[in-house]
Image 1 (cartoon, rainbow, N blue to C red):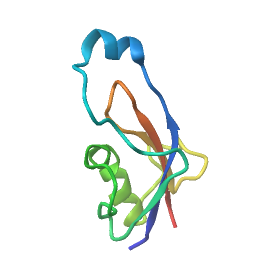
Image 2: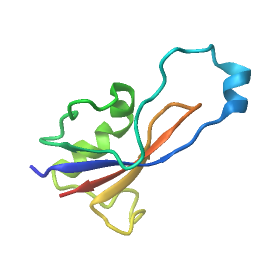
Image 3: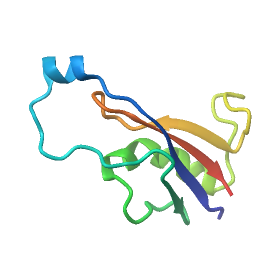
Image 4: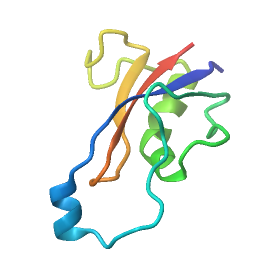
Length: 99
């Protein structure tokens, strides 16, 4: 099985949506741009956000098995994917790549 690098490449914040829909929370995402993790055997890396893992997990597992070319040529590197976490108020985009 291949290792997969997961790198945080973009963070967005939507204060208008937060003001309109979100209950205030004490602790939000603490992922930093450029931060990266290595997944071995398609498993969640230590310290990786559990909610974000649910979004990226199917792609990490597939890449670790040597699968790729998602959505028939979507990515320039067929052994990669760009996946965002499911936080609609402050999503983080992660670049996944098989090593």
